[in-house]
Every structure is written in structure tokens, then in C-alpha cells.
Amino acid sequence: EIRTGGSIGLSYPVKIGRVGMRYTLELVEMDDVSNSEWYADPEGMESVVPDTWDGDADKYFKWQEDEFGDDLNSVLRLYWAHDTRDHAFIPTKGYQTTVFGEASESGLGDSEYYKLGANYRHWFRMPWYKHVLSLRGRIETVDAYGNDEVPIYERLFLGGPRTVRGVEYRDIGPKVFRGNGGKSHAPIGGETLALVSAEYTIPVFKAVRFATFVDVGSIGEDAFDPELSDVCVTAGVGIRIDIPGFPIRFDFAVPVVDDDDYTDEEVFSFAIGFE
Image 1 (spheres, rainbow, N blue to C red):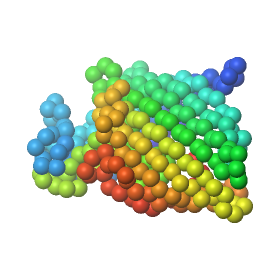
Image 2: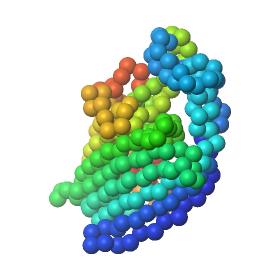
Image 3: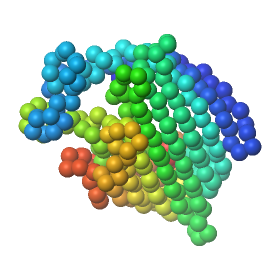
Image 4: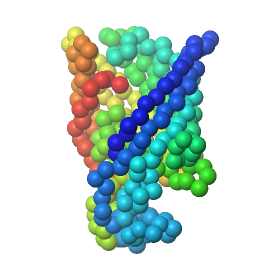
């Protein structure tokens, strides 16, 4: 996936937070697309390619490329945001929240979809030994209007060091399976995302903190349906190193509850930035 384009926006302070808008025009290209046959089940019995497509049967990613490759996206986003953190990179108190809605249109663009979402984070400085508790919640949904479907590059994904640690990148939620009876799979995302995380950090040295955390997330196949019966829960520990201007973190996590039998585990993850 290659995106080429630009954005322009403006925001205005209000009594609490800021309101703003941003317009984006971009060309989205899909490259190195798999030519294999992919199915909705490991046994290769259920197709995920619409019957209306006149290309090779069951080549899901080729269908996505044919339908949405080289598309021009014209998107307008409206949002409200509020930030009371005491530090941009390593907050110890305050909160950060964003509520947004966006829609693409076919006047200048090729796709027709909309997204709604909210993201909230809160940091609590404990009254003992500079311990910090941080909580995070995120909910988001995307849906197509008109006769379109949601392109795979606009669908929602979870998994990896910045969302649900302990599982492979983007591997939570709906998947397709390679070949008739094949065991390998690829995530295709969904239309509703729900995520909750809690992390507790303890100072070890001046620039080093120990962390323990729990991540809970789910990806629903349909809009406005988070499928909370299929959540993935992971737990782990980590180290936070505050290098000025370049904070890094190392995490070790494992799944406690799997969303399905095929989501792959990734015990170690590394990321730049504490949040």
C-alpha cells in the first residue's frame, strides 16, 4: 500500500478543548498483491470474493486490487480534541481525548465510506514513589454507503506494540485462509474496533521504568458490532527507557484469552515512544 497526497486543516479553541477539520486528498496504490486463492475458512469451503467480480475465483487480494487499487480518496474529517497532559512524551497525569467523524465522497474521489470514533487516555500519578497508572479506551467504526464496500486499507485492525501487545501485528479479527485446506492466514480487518488497556509503571532508575499491563481488544466484522464475545486479552511486562527526544520501550506479553484459534502470538515487541 502506497499513499501519495496531502492534507489541509484548521482548528479553533473552544471553552473546553479544540474543534477542527481536515481535508485529505490522496492516491492509494496497492502493490505486491498476493495471487493465491483465499477463503473465509481453513477448509476452503467458503468464498470471500463477491460473485459479481469477473476475475479469478477466490483471489481475494487480487479482487481488492482490482476494486480499490489506484483509488483517489477525498476525505473530510471533523473532530473535537482536549489535552491536559503534563508532558507530551512521558505523561504522569492528565488526559487526552479525541472524538471524530469523517467521510469520503465520490465527487473528487473513488470511494464512499464514513468513520466514527473516539479515543481516550488518562494518566494518574500515584501518591507513592512516582508510580503512574494509565488507562486507555478506543472505539471506532467504519461503513460504506452507496454501492461501495470498505476498502481493505480503510478497515480496522488490532494487534502489535501500539494496540494489543503479545500478538502478531494486525492479526486480531477476521482472517482469510490460503488455499483449499491451507493453514496459513492473512488478516483482513473489520468494520468495528474496541480497545481497552491498563498500564502501571514504577521507576527503577532516573530514566528507566518497569511496566506491567493488560490489553483487551476486539474487531467486529460489521459496522457498529464490536463482537465482544470474541475479545483478545493479553498481559505482560516491559521496560521504558527515557532517552531525551527518543523514548523507547520493550514489552513481553502473552495472550490470556484468544479471539480465535488462529491469531498468532508475538511475545516480544519494541516501539519508539511510550504511548
